[in-house]
Length: 129
Length: 192
Image (cartoon, each protein chain N blue to C red):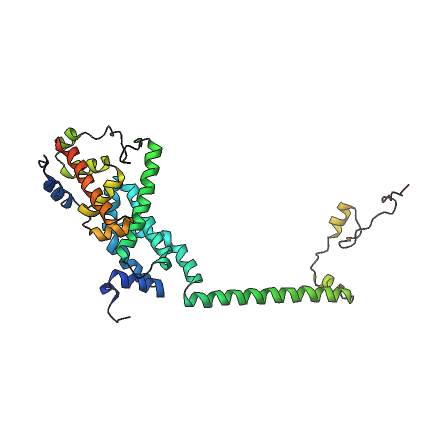
């Protein structure tokens, strides 16, 4: 486009403005928009859409089921422990016995995993004055 | 809603479709329809291609995120232009404050006086023989409140009523700003 004479002629400026070349965005613009929107689409889906509501409800139900079963298991463990069934846990645990060589190396005869013995002499109890 | 294909929907029908049913294709059509006009508007205001790309992206993301706030009483185009215009002005002020491109000093009529950018050299631009570039440089020289009006009216070709909706200004103010913007542009281009 060649330059035009704009001396005191508003019309010419208006024509030139209207004729200004269109600046086109790059092809990647749309791609960038959608890439930025991807996580939002998921959020929107969960928040608003009908399917999203069902999905959200499903997630809540599954979470509740998980919490309930987990709580039940914990309660039953405590109950079993009180009833004297704690031995069950010890039987189920897989403790690999140390070999004779290892025992001799460590100079131990027994592996006392759950009940470390405490020497009575080592415990000092302060008596109040 | 009618059974015609989405591509034949009006802008308002598309945004309502997207708002109610989250039809992603409707949003995509709106992006295709508006990316170029918005890009032109923002580019003419900021004069920076990269920055313009960021603003246009952000505009569409705002549309997507705030679609629920769209009320089917006005034109979609005015709504999206309002978002773009606000983002553009925010971006422009950020650049201006960071680069110290100009100083603002309110005069008797409350208008901005800007120090000329040293890169604006009409004689040099004329030598390059590019009218478009010359006008773009001159546009960047006029205060933002006039620049916006001139771009919307004379480059984008919007009606006065649409500009009043976009800017939220009374029609009288819009018209006077357009005239003053044109005068300023004419002054800048007079010596060419």
